[in-house]
Length: 379
Picture (cartoon, rainbow, N blue to C red):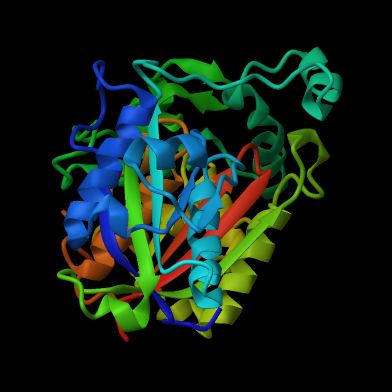
């Protein structure tokens, strides 16, 4: 992709966030879509490309009255929306469509009008991991994190710091689910979920969603909001089974996706002003910082503990409060993208002064997939 050839011109989340007991999943998609369209002054009839996960792009298009010339239903978990941005940029550059709407909506808490299809017994997970008794992400993610802690001589306290610092960011965000300060002791005394994860190390379960509108940079100048340009993109997948990771202390998908995005953007790590790393659990920012190359292996915990990612730090990270304190309806990637766009527009509740480049990095499954998008507000 040619850097800066594609721009985000519309971005918005659902009207309500957190607990929305009276709106279905498709309704959340539509609400976010209409908000994003209003943000850029477009109508549904102006859209000729659609992408979504957790809902069929066919259902989405029909519900909104759109007959697109391009559609993407890539669904690889929480980073699906990063991949949608990448695929949409390629499609617009190739002339397959001109204006793409990417939507997300989940009734993760209220469970209205939607539910996930469990992996069947014939799947790889069903054959080779489920018989050993894992019960969802909190138990599956313990496999790599325990090896990571042992390899680098880290402790539970190191897993507590991301939650503490991200709560500080959340305190500045009126839309965050939890804003009250917490301490390391608060995290370590919260209920045990699955060793070593305490409750405050685990993501929220909320309702909500978001949507983005992308078009060519040439057209983007005609829209009401300042365009946010796509500088670099990357994606990769490794394995649907966490037990089969090449290295439990590092995600191959993270490394491949991040390296591709940075090469495409033509930037160094020192150029990055703002960082969003998907944080369904508190270990993910550690892996992200290391696999993206901001820290050496085993050094991310100290980097966070020394407040480099905190307010006033040299690398502000997860400034909306993250999946641990802001929102997490099941697939968090859209919320990370939204915060990157807000930062590049200069309108984030916890705005990073003078930020010019933002990286949004996501995970899908238990390190199964990854997507990386690098944004800039400089043409």
